[in-house]
Image 1 (tube, helix red, strand yellow):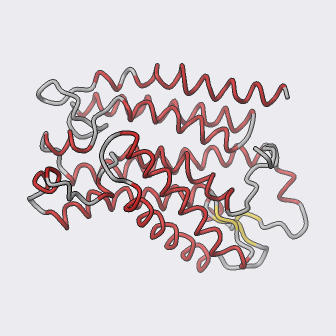
Image 2: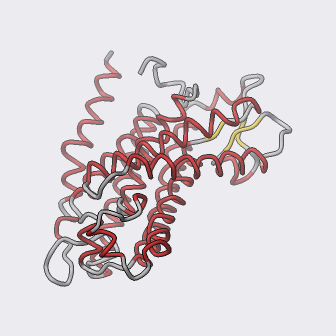
Length: 294
């Protein structure tokens, strides 16, 4: 009971105090006209955007690591997600950015950068959680991390090859996230965008893990984060391909490709919120310290 109280106090502290405090820096980002049609790298002065990115992603990594070390993996990802959600909320929406002339090319580049860092944050949270429950790996018959860096993304039975199930899981996760994000993301408003990315990650985790379950494979939240990051890059790329130079016209007509509505940081938030939840729905108990009923 006491640990549960401390856990929810920590989560609320991140969501109601530390998140808004860090996000205050993002509220100072301005585009060339003094407005807030900005993302981390599109619209504001480059070094100002980079400074906010380092602050927000660094704070998310630190608090996610603390939550994972003290409580559970899910606590870490939720805390990190809350930190970044506040930062994203204080920046512009995609319709603001497009009206201001934001380049889809730069949005795709930003999506690559934030996606890679987001995967790194999830790996950090996972590894800390793994160290705090190392005895699980010694149990007979329990899958273990694949050799080398692949172990960040997939766990296997000893002796099994990693390439095929890893490829299958990643492809299924990407396709599922893209379909779910396309269906659920109905507009550029912050709540709509974050709901779309969270549902996309949740669906990706659930469907991908369910697909490889019979092979004795465990997919990690880092793999789901990587899949969501790929979809985040595909959003602005699809907008360029489908709309070309008529991006503003497509926006005004309400015909913008749905995957282009979230800004890049929204996809990182969705991966942190939805990825572990989707894997849990697929039957994985991601952390022995987390009560199964929670």
